[in-house]
Image (cartoon, rainbow, N blue to C red; front, side):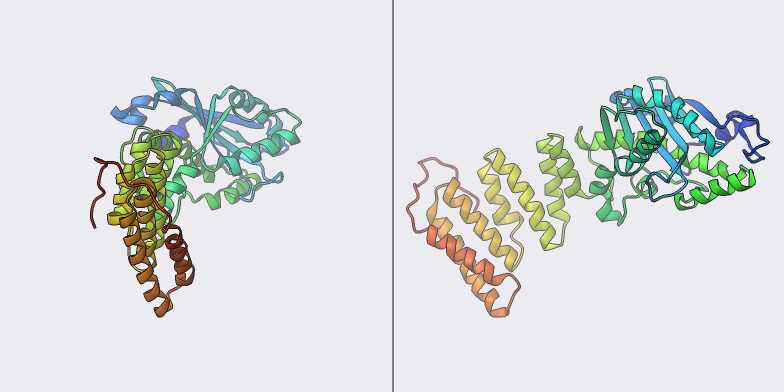
Length: 386
């Protein structure tokens, strides 16, 4: 879509037209030291027929713009955007610091919103937004407890999109994963300079784009959280590009075991890097071991993840473990280890990295394999043949 929030700029411009400042907030300015701009939209305009996630109605979505990007006590948040939703409406509030001296009053006005939030939703808020707000409240000598639940979406974003996109910036995710293309957006790195220019000149025309950027950020958080919960908790598959391994990890953490397995198997099917394939196979193996799904575990090592060279030898070792320890078929375990031993000898001869350590591991398994192992009882399942 060309703009996810049509008419937003016009609404921001219309919100309290008196808020258009052309004079600096200096000694001659008798206006308020801070202001709150508020806009409310019907929920169906924001979400369409999908609707909001019901659990998000008690959440507070937050994004701040500051006088610097480094963080720390010397960084002042001059624009604090909040979004809240209920069944009918989505409300965006923007607390704007017209003069630096008005910060204590702005913090006091904002404090009630922060304390009332059941869940705080941010993007990199654990490392940036919330520590900066905490520092400013400490300086103002006003107590502020952390939210009961802080959902920082940068973690899921990193898991889902950093590898396929090469970044997990919010604007890149909007465009690639949510289908949102911002129009005439201001780069976040330019925002501190725009505000400092306003403080020097009193001309607020350059801040219109900053207000629009901030409002779109907090609305995007609502969309992103809703989609991520559907993809992770409800097991729906996201559109490409997506990191299937990352999705599997998130689903596993959410307790969606079967959906996690499905995502990890897709990752194994599309991944070309042998090291990544091995990592994904190990994740799958842990889930299968947890549920004692030994035939599927053997299928993993025999058919799905053998690879070549060192990776094939490692898969043979894992297959031998399943045959010996779980399926009680020592002859097949020994055959797999002998194949792995022959392969490691060839790898040693070619000077393959890691071949020496792999050979020691194979020999150790062969030595242990000489001890007797109970045979499988009659009628036990037979693993698939290679």
